[in-house]
Length: 216
Image (cartoon, rainbow, N blue to C red):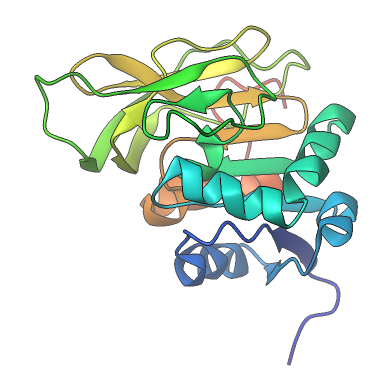
């Protein structure tokens, strides 16, 4: 039987996501995830997730075709709870070397580049996340130090202004997560990151323990 009191979480259709895996993680957190049917629904949802695995360009094209990029920009402007995961995180920036002709949503400044040639790509597996201790501007910090699962070939080496940033190292330091009021962007996959990632999802939903050192 469906729990009608569960927190509903809308998922944007990027066309390049393993929805079964990430939706299962949200169900374990006590939420009710669903694939958002249209941009209006996505804009009005209390919680929304932009997932993604694969090409920056194809994911951005899928969002734009459905008008969901406009809904996500609106959510970000209003500070409504929105999460971006892996390729879904990257879409919040201006663009990526992976798809030179594709424009991102440009909610945050920055363009993604490929990892340096000294390391194999994609980065695939566990890596250590270092929370900077610099919380987002409202003093809330969700990301804690820990091990996360990554699957990416492109990255940002610097955090944009106005966010709390967490970093990891793969050949060089790169942005693992960015936070600001209403917005959580994860380059890693929290749904594949064991208890640490599950705890992050629960904190984002407001049901988990605060991250160590958080002002929550």
